[in-house]
Length: 563
Image (cartoon, rainbow, N blue to C red; front, side):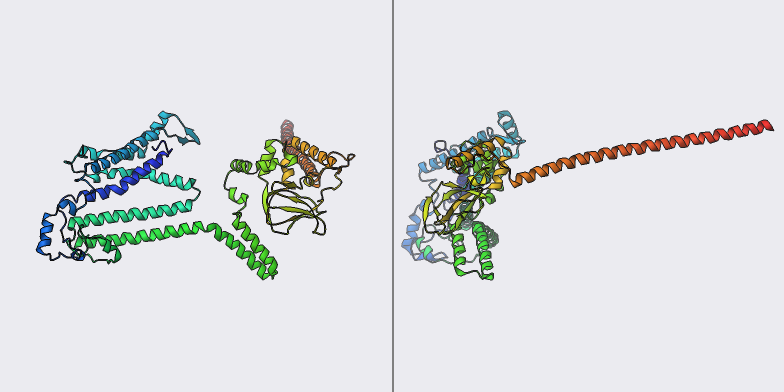
C-alpha cells in the first residue's frame, strides 16, 4: 500500500515510530490491569463520585462479588477477544517489517562525497555499516517481544509491550522526516505549528499513561489522588472537576516532577509558538515598517493628503499581490547559475515576445532575464512622455496602458498584457529620425506591472555578444525603415558617448602600460649602469693602489742601491 501510494521511506519509518511511541506504554499499562489490581467500589452512580471506599448496601456488595473482574479493568481486549490480540500482533509485525525494510533501503541510499553522489552499492554499505546509526538500527529491531513469548496472540500468553521500547531508537528518521517536510513544504510555519501540537499531544498521552500506571500500582480508587474505579460513570467528570492533593510519598514525587517538567515544557512551547508567530509575520512586519517610514516622511514634509493616499494605496496593492519583495531580494541568496535558471523559466517566454529578441541566441537572453526589473505604476501615472530620452524598454506583465495625446484626453491605442514598447529607443540606431526620444505619451489606466530593461544593462550584455549586437541593430534598422523613420544615408552604427569614453579609457590604459614598461626598462638600465660604474670605480681604485705600491717599491730599491 505504501508503494502504491508512493510514500517515501522516511515517512513510512516515521509512521512506524509514531505507532510505537503512542502504544508501547499505553498497552503495557492496560496489560498490567488484567486481574484484580484495583480496589473495587460500588456501581452506584452516587458512590462513584466518592474519593474513599463507599458504604454499600448488601445488594451492592453482592453485585460486586458476582461481577466479573474482566469488566472492572479494561485490558484493550487482551484476555477477551482473540482477534484483538491478533490485530496487535499483526500491527507490530507490519511496523517491524518497515524497520527491516528501512535498513535495506539505507544500504541502497547514496551519499555525497566531495560534492558527488556515491552510487556504488559496496561503498554505500561500507559507509552505513561503519556508522553509529547502523548500531542503533540493529538494536531497534531486536525482537525481544517475540523471543519472550512466541506466539503471544494465543490466550495463554501474557504480552510484554514494554520490551518494544527499543523501537524508539529510530527517532533520527522522524527528525529527518520533519526537516525534509519543513524544507519542501510550501507552508513551513503551519507545519511547525502542527509539530508543536503533536508534541503536546504526545506529552499529555505519556503523562496520562504514567499517572494511570502509578494509580494502578497504588490501587485504583484507594485514595483521593489516584484514578478512581473504572466501573463508575465518566461523563459527569467532564462537567466538573478539581485537582486533588497527593497523599502518599510516591504521589508527591510524581506531582513534583510533573510540575517541574510542566513548567519547562510550557516555557518551551510558549517560546516556540512565539518564535513561529514572529516568523509568520516577519514579512508583514518588515513591509509595515517601510510603509510607516514613508508615512512619517510625508507627514514631516507636509505632503498633500491626496498624494499620501495614493502612496498608501500603492503599498496596499503591493501587499495584496504579494510583491512586497523584488525578485533580486528573494533570489540573491542563490548562486548565479540557479538565479539564471529560475529567471529563464519565469521570464524567457516574456522576453521572446519582443520583436528584436526573437532570433537572438539563448546566452544573450539568459543574461538579459537577470536584468529585468518589475515596476508597479499607479492609476494615472505616465510611464513615458513624448520627447523624453529613452533609457528603458517596457514589457506589460499585468494591467492596461493607454497611448494618449498631448492633452491627455485623446486615446490612440490601448496596450494590454504582453505588449512591448520602447525597445528601439535603447539601441542607439544611427539615422533614426526620432533619435533616442519617445514618440508618444503612455499612461497607466489602473495599477500596472511592467518589466523594465535598462539601456545600460542591455549594452553591457551586448559587449560579450558582438554577433547578437549586429543582429539587433539590423533588425532595428529594418523596423525603422518599414515605418519610414530611418535615414538610409547615415552610417549603420554610431558610437555612444559611453563607447567613446570606453575607447578613450582603453587608449589611456594602453599608454599607461607602455609608459610603465618604459619606466621599468629605464630603471633596469640605470641600475645596470650604476652597477657597472661602481665595478669600474673599484677596479680603478685597485689599479691606483697597485701603482702606488709599485712606485714605493721602486723608490726603496733605488735608495738601497745608492747606499
